Amino acid sequence: MSRQARWYTLLGLVFFIVLEALLAAAIVWWPSFAENVKTLKTMAAPLPWLREQIELMESTGVSGYVVGQHYFKACNTLGAAAAVLFAINAVAGEAHRGTLEIWMGRPVSRTRITTERYVGGLLAIVVPVFLSSATIPALLATVDATMTYGELALCSIHSSLFLACIYTTTFLWSAMDSQPLKIAVGMLFFSVFQFSIYVVKTITHYSLFRIVDLEQFIRITIDDELKVWIELGMVGYCAAVYAGALWVVHRRVP
Image 1 (cartoon, rainbow, N blue to C red):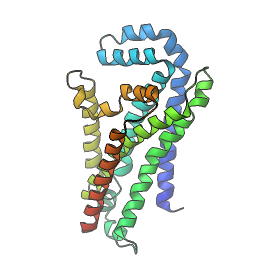
Image 2: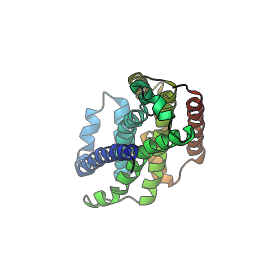
Image 3: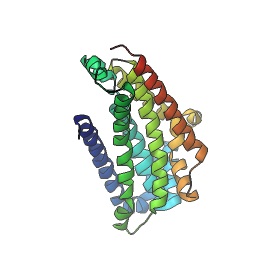
């Protein structure tokens, strides 16, 4: 295994451990949530969007609670941050360290070395989402609840594609720039801005997080299917943006 592959494996492992720890804690807390949900709604009264989230989880039971805690909260927030951090150094990091000429001077095509780096980071984001989701039925068994692997797989696909869009966008910026810190600050600021408008009812529909909010994941578990046009749209976006990143890398001068 190459040093680069080991690095991405380590990043993915850390991401998985964090997701799994949050997931386990959330499921352990499920009985307490179900018992005290009325109190929680009262406490959330000053924040209408939060109260609506709690009411949605209450009305849909354990499945709504799990997708809210795992996909909407953990994967959206931590996943978005991880997607940015895993991509910022892809090309910009080499330029910042002064090793871009060495990286591009390897006896392999730029397409190959760029693709290897892109796929490595992408897998470090996506695989932990699926692996942590696969443990949900076993964790739920400890609190006498259940969810099917099928609905969890669909939710994982939807969540992973959204994170792939964030990762690919950051990867393109990394291919164009030489300052990883600037990219990180810019992308994280954009993510925070998008989430901030999500919680404002009058402008929430302008937020990209509407694509992966609690309502979307609950709909997936109820319908047991994905909206193909949304998923294909995200796949198409990633493909187009990655093609743009390849074009930039091929024309970049070390």
